[in-house]
Image 1: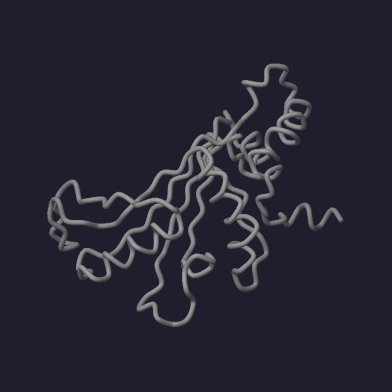
Image 2: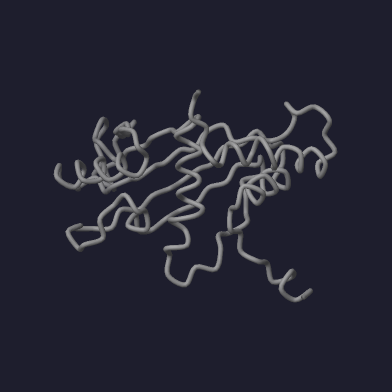
Length: 189
């Protein structure tokens, strides 16, 4: 018997029926789902090799797989960037690893942020959600014992099959994404 992540079970058993009813969809293939999660971290062009290796090591701990180092496509003299220079790393998660990372992000990492009141509820217009994290130490996989030389920033993009922001937001809310309460909703109470 194959392992099924808890968030995937939640999606299949509870979220799909609820979304079918709320979105008025009869075909289960038309229900929005998450296709991939992309983690991206950039470092400055003048970062030394040790810092670059540290970023790759930390991102691989967080994601559970080795990231790909991204390189500059063209030279930009004002930023001291040369073509082919390493500028960051990225990793794409799909399947079980994607659901496991999303569960760790929603239920463990985001509540670790000091004075956390929720994440922004703005999507990109096509149902995809991007989130920036300034300090990677909110993840349990990274040691917070002070041995880190610098905090590593991280961009997380959740790509869905939703056709609009409302369907994407509804999908993420049903999965447990802690969206910030808007001022209008708070005033209505």
